[in-house]
Image (cartoon, rainbow, N blue to C red; front, side, top):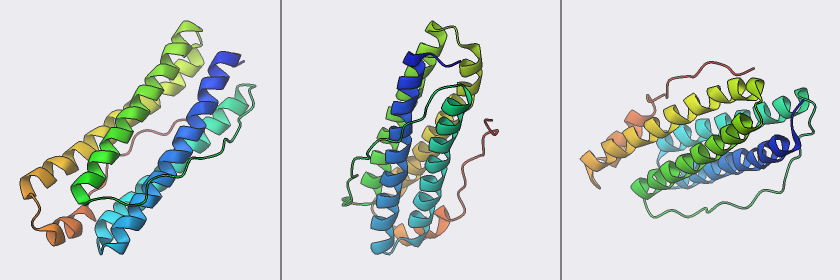
Length: 168
C-alpha cells in the first residue's frame, strides 16, 4: 500500500513528466521550424520517453493501491534563442527532474517503503543518463561554437542515449 504522502508526491511527478514531454515537443517543433531535422528528431524521441515515464508513475501508483491523478499541464515556452540555449534549458530541466525524483526517494526512505525505493532506482539511473546525454551534447556545442550547425544537426541523428533497464 502506498502512503498518502508518497501518493501525493508521485502524483505531482506525473504532472512534471507530462510537462517534460510537452516541453520537449515544443523544443522539437522549434528546431524543426528552424531547419534542424536531427535536433527535432532527438527532442521528439525525448518527448516520447518522458511520456513513458509519466505512464510508469500512473501505473505504479495505481498498482500500489493509490489513485493516479492527471493534473492540468502548464504551457511550455515555444521560442528559443538558438540551439545552445535549447540544450542548456533541457539540461536545467533534467536537473530539476532529477531533484524531484530524489525528493520522492527521500519520502520513500522516510516511509520505509522498500518496494517504492527499489522501483525508484530505475528513475535515478535514468536521470543520471539523461543529464549526461544532454551535457555531452552541450560539450560538443561548446567545441563547435556557433559554426557547423549543419554537421552537428546531421550528426545528432546518430546520437542515442544508452537505454536503462525497464522499470516494472
